[in-house]
Length: 231
Image (cartoon, rainbow, N blue to C red; front, side, top):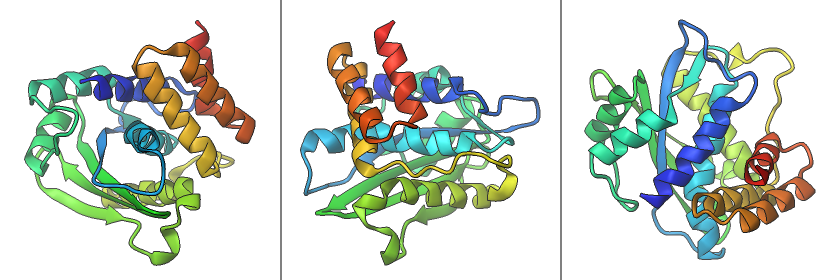
């Protein structure tokens, strides 16, 4: 369950960000861990880290919408454990719905990714936690949006598709909200920071959060990570 611990740390940080909607009447979405279904072209450690970094980044992007609330990570982690999902397990629609429902979410997002020497593909499903039905299968199917160097933009596109699937306009983000333009190098280091933080290695986590900030100084999530490991 170590991967789930790191993923929980990631989502806890997302939910603590200023501007993440938590008000009454907001729509709750649970983002489950993503699975590497077979990637090549980077260090395997990076792909292991992206299992945390991709859902954390997607959750952060969704949480910028004032009508979205990211499900409590503690409840989602408990629901995952109750379903006896190991680190390499794949959640089907029924399981994702159960996890989402137990976490108090209206919808659950589950997915996977694959990097084939720079051609990056993410596939995810938006699951109705009440009915167990898959509302929409989303992906970056456009060949023009499959370059690894555009990973943050790929995730941003997926967030827009999620909002569309649950009938929320992407334009609901408040005026002036930050558009993510994080370079992939910075996102990789942020993900590695999450990975090492989940393993209890605060020194190495701090090194990667700092490298993410060196590459992209406005990376708020990496700055939050740095503050956590310095405590």
